[in-house]
Image 1: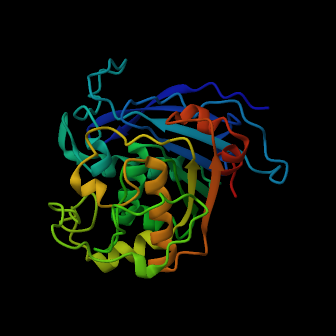
Image 2: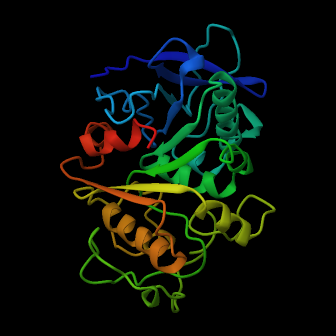
Image 3: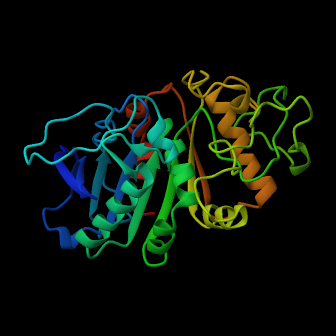
Length: 315
C-alpha cells in the first residue's frame, strides 16, 4: 500500500510560478516512468488525489509520480518572492482563461508548460494520465482538443485522458440529443446515432459556442483539426452513479441543458460517451469505470479500487 504525502513545488511558467503538489514513488527522477496529472474542480481541492492506493501487481516496473497543480483565485505567498499565477474565482481556468496576474499566460499554456517540465524532469517517462474531475474534467476535455503541445508529446509518450463527472462537455459538432429523453440514460443505455440531431427551434442561445461546442474556439485551427486531435487520444470515463445533481449554477444554462440528460451530471456523461461512440465511432481506446456511493466527491472517487487501477497505473 502506497500512502503518498505530497510536497509543494513552484513550477516556473513565463515570468511567474504555479503551485504544484507533487509526490513520486522514488526520489530518483530518472526512474519515474508514469505521471498521473490531476486537474482540480472549482473548489480547488488539490489534496484529493493523494489517497492510499495499491501498487499494480501486473506493473512491477512502473514507478509513478503524482502532480496536482493549483489554479488559485487569490494570491499565495511564495518563498522566492516570485509572482504566483492566479485566475478569477469560479471555473474560468477550465476555458483557457488568461491569468489575472499575467494576461498573456492562459491556463492551457500553463498545462503545456507543466507537461514539458515533466518530460524534461523525468527522462524515462513513457506514460501520462491527464485526469480531471468536475471543472477539471471540463479543462481536460477542452485542453485536449486545443493543445498542439500535448499532441506532439503524445507521439513519444502514451497519453490517456481520464474524465470524472462534469456539468458540461465539449461537443464536436452541432448534433445533440433531446433534452427530454425518457427514461434518463444510464451507463448501460445504447443511444443510436440517429438520436443525435441538430436541435429544433427554439434553439438555446449559443448552444454550440465554445465551451459547449467548437464555434469561436480560441484557436485558428479548424473544427476538423480540433475533432481529429481530440478523438486520437485514449480516453476513460468514470461513471459516478449517484452524482445526480446538476452542477454549479455557472454551468446550468440553456446551452448546457441542450446537451441532454437533464439535471444530472451522471446522465450527461452517459449521453456524451454514447455521442462519442455512436456519432464518431470512438470505440477503440475508450474505457469506462462504474462507481457508486461517491456523490460529487473526487476524493471518494479516487479511493475506489476500480478507479485506482485506472488513474494510478500506466495501463
